[in-house]
Image (cartoon, rainbow, N blue to C red):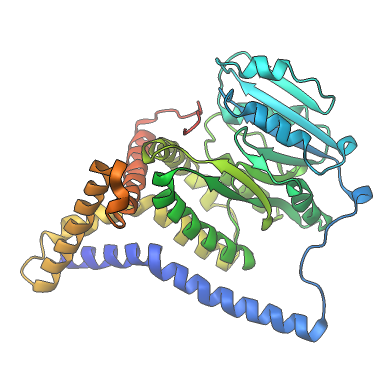
Length: 390
């Protein structure tokens, strides 16, 4: 009987995480959107945040941490210089976290009064690099980006227009990925699914996390990060919420990122995220949230973090329930899924010929990554150093 309860509970939670929660979210989102549309029809009050005139644009500090980014750094510098934002209102800080390639050499060669560089002698981790950069920020709006992320020309304008509302503390931008064939069949599919959830949550005021590659916040919302704060793009927005500020998502503030070359690269990144997630769980769970934001945190974050244990529970409990045909069919379905994921791994170079095999492989890999991350968290292993996924 216990095995049956465990099986049904795990099955429900797995199905809820990937299927039921998106459906519930869509229904709530649709109702909220209909109410907003009706309100617009009756009041004719513009709901969209309007662009700010150049003369009214706030002064901003753009912070770009980098570790061994010689491949992308010149493109990033050129991208920053081409932003459609008044240069007299822009400070750019590149901070190199003990880079050992040509990153420091490239930064030293920059001759632009808008761009400042911090070259840290030792590799201390992204959190420390961000803290150092914030210390030299001269303006009240901070914008964070990665060295490999290219902003659309109007991205900064789109981000800062929201700060006309004093209640808003963090504005999250939208990230698009460029990648090869393996990415398009794995993380590319997953990212489109993830972006849809984030967009619906944003419409309901339930945005919890940013993409570290493109987001902005008020300087007064920033609290120095601990060296072991790995998921800064989750911790920073949640701390802003704790201070009483709102967090919003703007899909029109766009950046482009180059995805890792393979699922193996993403696996490494997910392990680090998992360690940081479990380490920050106690603090994050104490942040006061609205009911819909609580639902988002539980469904979109917490359940994702514990999903590997639910999948293990589902599989193990299934072996104790083989007396009935329905459970034998469930075990066969699980076996087929893991077998197909294994085929995706073995034939990943030719995975296009195996429908959904690469996607199954990717889903198994990211859940195994969180399991590995949890074990590292329990061991007390530090994950402060950061590196590119690709």
